[in-house]
Image (cartoon, rainbow, N blue to C red):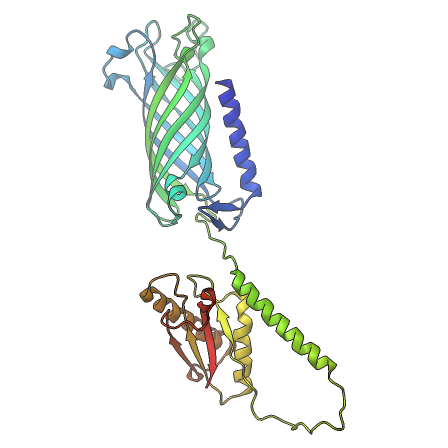
Length: 382
């Protein structure tokens, strides 16, 4: 059991260190690393316990007569959608029927636990999910008191045996009521030295146990309570941006090589009535209608073109890739993309909506041979 204690303590220390140093990853999804003040909660509850001892009369006692009461206060934090840790302070009243000891005692104690959200870990993270099932494993301590909540007197039979390490396991059932309030029902089991209740003093080093059942309420301690997925840039978008940069560099290099004066060159008109417009495109991440920062340049260029040409109008046609989603879903997604780009032109650059028309094709048309490139909105000058 000493080896188990050391292993559990090591796991708790490792968890604390990882909470400060690593990103949150769940089912392959990376979540943003939040502030140290986020994801904390406090809970309070009460219930009953059943002390299991190997005393002679224990098996013959009525079940109801062996039930004692208990209460608990806990403070915890979720480090990721899957893993959390908590500190629990608890205490209560033990009723047991072991021979030659007081049939009733009080106790105070606490334990530190690792928590594991099974539904998030085995399914998918959903911050609005009502029910969650959380097994826990921990290490604790119990200190025995007499019926008057006092330390046993010098003549007490368990005077020198009234404290013990405990090994705790259990299941927590959380029921979310709101963003920061939840009800819980907890079933637990803890193992302690047999001598804790004053029995088993014959020298045999064995163990008693206690089953616990509690219910109560939890509150978020301010700060953020949910986790936010990191919006990772699509490599295809990065490649597209790099291609645009390389093209502009090449054009700039060609312009730099041109002579400053060329008497034999044909005369260039002094002014151009209308700018030449090259269609711009806005690429999107999978299942998204949000314009990434790197794609804002296309919206900006189109806005500048329209400002320079007051009589020009533009049509925005949006698409979705064919290999993900259903046709109905992709049609709705492409509509959102078209409207998002149009809104950026009007709200961010002051382009009149009367000069903008939109259309969306879903996955019925695929402008590019590369599947991922079809998560796009394309500007067409009219």
